[in-house]
Length: 282
Ligand SMILES: Nc1ncnc2c1ncn2[C@@H]1O[C@H](COP(=O)(O)OP(=O)(O)OP(=O)(O)O)[C@@H](O)[C@H]1O
Ligand SMILES: [Mg+2]
Image (cartoon, rainbow, N blue to C red; front, side):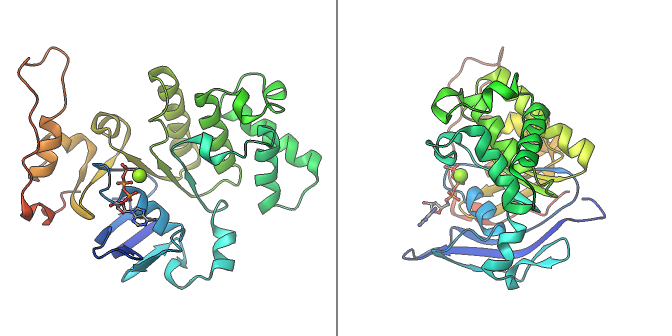
């Protein structure tokens, strides 16, 4: 845990309207200038935590004892104030660029417009800034690609456009929600490399949401394990193999290993008391 925490969340709970149980229940964590992984099965509440931090949950009741981002008390900020925080000081990279890019606007213009949303500048200046950013996320020949439409670019390129758009305003916190799950292995490594560079060079805090244990093990400094809306374990990524919670151990046992035993993989045998957290070790 870093001494200068960017984010401090205490007992965050989220209940979507019309449902009878909490999608996220009493989740607490802090984030320094580090890479924090949040892992857990589908529906365990990972994306809900990200959306709650950005206050993008209009159809849910969000309560928390504390939700501090830098000097801001997120709980008390109005929607109008959040407009200056979202995209500028904290950004979320969403899973699928196809749903996030406007299909009828050229991709480069979308990046430039995102910049103009936060900074007063001419269109020409925004274009310059967007082109520089496309170069920074390693898009080849940015001048040509700038004028393409979303359906004319590949998935990996689309994901890099999303990253470029999220990083334009130099945010201090980036929440990446499964940023690489739609990508092939080579492009995935390039995208992770870009995110890694941001943590190292700009000192941002990064929350990496994923269901890929191997990815967070290799990429993150610390990992939170979510199960059924509860944060059941928090540990240093390098300690993942020594996890104590039965759910985490179950996930690890269900991972295929090259050269490992050819016996059928273990299947999770769920227990009601799994939602009880073990003492965090990190
Ligand atoms: N808008 C909504 N209205 C009602 N319930 C919702 C809504 N969005 C999510 N949920 C429910 O909240 C729970 C947590 O969902 P969430 O999207 O946070 O899971 P997740 O861990 O991100 O899953 P995945 O790995 O599939 O992305 C799920 O049970 C889901 O069905
Ligand atoms: Mg999700």
